[in-house]
Length: 125
Image 1: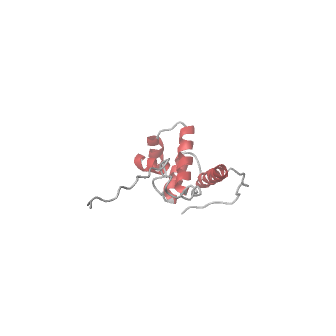
Image 2: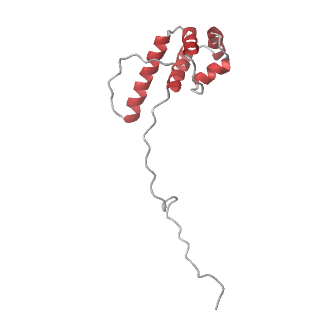
Image 3: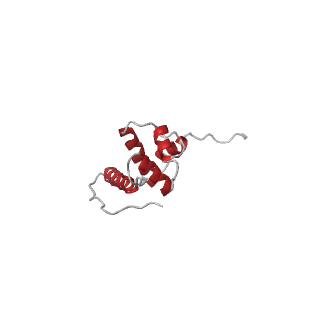
């Protein structure tokens, strides 16, 4: 009698993960408001060919904080957003309207279908 366990054949899947069930495909996430607002601020700053430091000084906020807002890393207050918008020659309503337009554009692009534009006013606290 042998003390050795019986030999088992090792099964190697044909492709990695083939032995695992398929994971459900997640729906694309809607963009965050802070990402939309940050993109609008950065795009407008670039159009005006201004530096972060220039706009931050005009808005009386720190340059690192403005950078974080533009990258969607910080959730800015309405006062800070208004200051950044005014430093770029925009009103707060202009900023919000452009962010809403960006949201509509991304949603219609992500789903591959045309959506009617939302003509309401978006407010952020």
